[in-house]
Image (cartoon, rainbow, N blue to C red):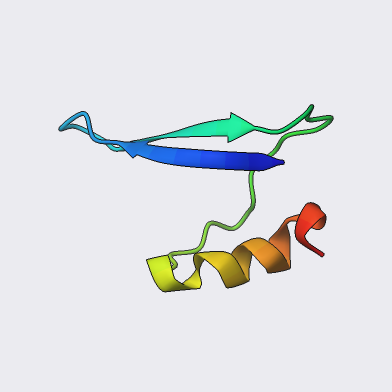
Amino acid sequence: YIGEFEVVDDHRANKIVVELNGRLNKCGVISPRFDIGVKEIESWTARLLPSRQ
């Protein structure tokens, strides 16, 4: 579902620009929010997103 993403620094709060592949039927938040490190992103993505299973 997610093609590429880019972190944009606007000197206030960082924003993430996401390129989508195809269409999203339902979009929501993952709750509760977890603090994870950069090295852990792939493992959490594989665990939580249905397209990565």
